[in-house]
Length: 308
Ligand code: CP
Ligand code: NVA
Image (tube, rainbow, N blue to C red; front, side):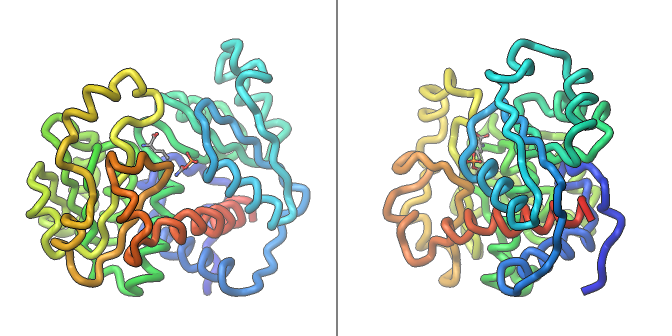
């Protein structure tokens, strides 16, 4: 594969920071990391991990990816660093970027991530904000690619909250030209500026649909995807959202309405029996644990590209 140099030392804050060609490059590189013995070494490079929210998959896949590349990570826990004390982001970003080669940030406001990127002298990666989860979307599309090989045949239906995960799927799907349908209760639609950007990217505006009609969204779909109804930071909305999302659980009945080759995805962590049943997570159509594994391969591809 031809090496792409334009991502070297670049921030990755949004799925739309990548071009179609760059997404395809990272997915191919990730497949090679997964299936071949690639020898990319970023020896002595250091990734700083600033996580204002909990994480299992993102944190550990970044740590293992960096270690496989010959580098290391530093876990910058807000409660044991001065971040938790409220040191301004512009100070933290300048200092940490003088020690680290790349920084991954998981936080609440997307504008805080942008503030890190503005002041950091090294690339900043979005490890999830309230607006987007672009590293997750790369792993999701790698999982879809492994299953269907050709994106043209894919109809991806996301059932649930129009949240960070849905927003990044929409943008990445638009860049790859995939039909994306979002089925959500009224009032829980994806971010309007993301939707606007996706329509600008798509050459065909029929490829993105947002509806509260689950049946029409599922008919003909070959990827069914869901995420928690209440994201991190929305703990106080749980009761209300559980009520509003009634009927949006992916169960066997819903799965049977999709195409016969349909696969099931969930970024995890899941609340079994809320957004998805235990039976569907464990069924033979589920690719949820392959999808989680792919976080590692994509992270390795992304880091090796940014750091080369
Ligand atoms: N999917 C995902 O980002 O999981 P974590 O919150 O465990 O990182
Ligand atoms: N939407 C979820 C994703 C978790 C990986 C959240 O933000 O909590």
